[in-house]
Amino acid sequence: MAHALLVFAHPLQDSFCAAIAARASAALTAAGHTVDRLDLYAEAFQPCLTAGERRAYYGEPPDVTGDITGHTSGVADAVARLRAAGKLVLVFPQWWFGMPAILKGWIDRVFQPGVAFRHTPGYGQILPCLDNIDSVLTITTLGSPWWVAELYMRNPVRRQIRSGIVGPCTRSARFRMLNCYHAEKLSDARREAFLARVDKAAGAL
Image (cartoon, rainbow, N blue to C red; front, side, top):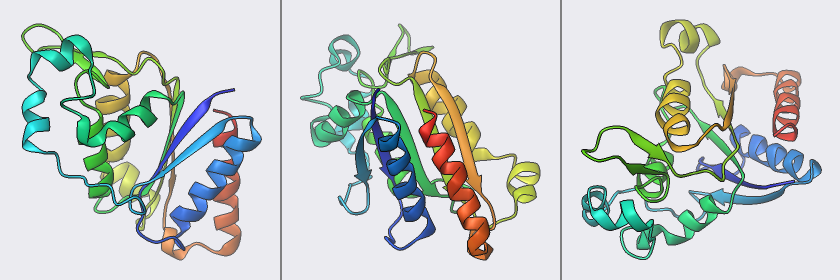
């Protein structure tokens, strides 16, 4: 069994996203995993990348040593929690077909050189550093119907996370994404049906 980091990004604790996060956590626990729930809003995570953190993207020490005492000192706890995880679960709403700013800021500040990846000479290809992560599950809610997100928008969040973040930063992590469409208009039965999908997906990690 493994240790899972569940990152939850929604400001309302009575939202459907919160119910999803609770079910995912319970399913992970039932499968024998330990769960670290990181509630970005409740923990008042500061999403703005600092000038020093950005400059360190191109500094030598982070690439060579992976030291988190300098360039990532402001997010040392978040870095440690990411490094301790074997599974990563992201639960959030899609707003304007994107992730909430607080979640994007968590990625900007925590997925830094020496933590999530390292540069090759000349800042060409990047090499993954998150060898500890073997699977990533992303669960989102949307107000739009499936055809708008999938056919018209072509699911930009899935492409961003799978190809722009998970692919470059992990060696071969399994990726799965569940989207709950028309979230504001779901009947109780359809909500429960989606939560059952969450149970199955989280339990299979």
